[in-house]
Length: 109
Image 1 (cartoon, rainbow, N blue to C red):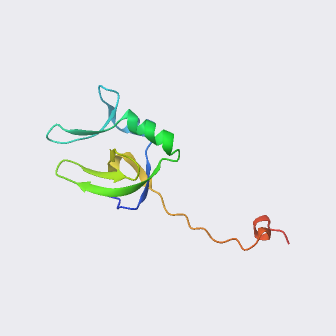
Image 2: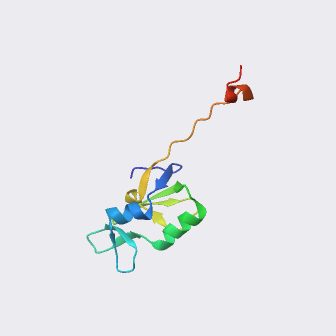
Image 3: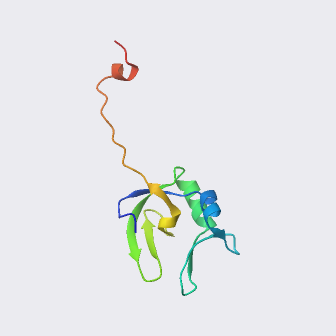
């Protein structure tokens, strides 16, 4: 598991995952298969929800779920589970420096 609760992560696009993994018979993207024949998929509903609610595709990890079959993350505001393979990268927290005056913005002297 690469991420921890509270981390902001960027979810890969459908196109990125489609190029990296295969589509299953229902048109979803199969990400992981285990030895028992089970699998995890990135489904069209997940893509639709992300596109509707979060255009920048940045989600916050809520919990880590470790079990013998798959390790997954739940994220704030979604019922679906995500895996490391679905995540593009960790999004660093932005550091903002205070602006002391509008003249600094315009560089007027």
